[in-house]
Length: 285
Image (cartoon, rainbow, N blue to C red):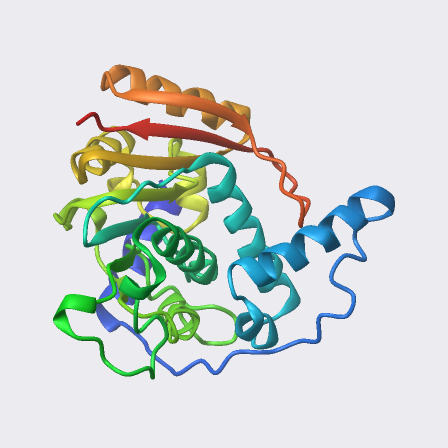
């Protein structure tokens, strides 16, 4: 009870004070990216990194990032490649990331969908892809719109920057990208694709991350996420460990949603303490 009361008060103040300070970022040399691996796994990681670097045009991002952040974004691209097969057939495609925290992986999501849109729509129709390029005409606008939403965007880190500060840095070069600071249950836009890393399906992690129990609404959140999908849309959910994966499946069953379990995702770039288990939810046309 004390933990929840503390979270209620702390969350109230940071939500309303909304501290903001410009974060300028850090860069690191990438000479020893895969020292945490050895043998065949290390060689595979090197080869895949080179492949993704060229395919997704990540040269600028690689130069202007830390080693860990670069690897995390490579892992996100690999996750999306393995489990999400977007086939955009409209002039505008909208993507939402739920619970974005400081959205350190935004470049991975943006680069993946940018490539897929170029592949399906033709490169000439995907213009002004980086901030600073000439503004496109109405008939040649960029059809990619990426949103991230975070209920606790003004949580303060030890360096006195907030999640908001970091997110603004991570998305500064990504066109048509928004970091939305609000409760997802109060957000009512429609999307073609939704990405959701580690939804809170039990109370303990929610409280450990500083949120009050009044924000623990797993079934309501899942229903709203499904309702936020356009017809024919897809939602990729990643749960941490088998226990949360099983709870997530029960939530999907109770709502009678169409889904497919994809199992454990083992990426080529990083090793995580806990399994990352993937589910794809489909909204039928």
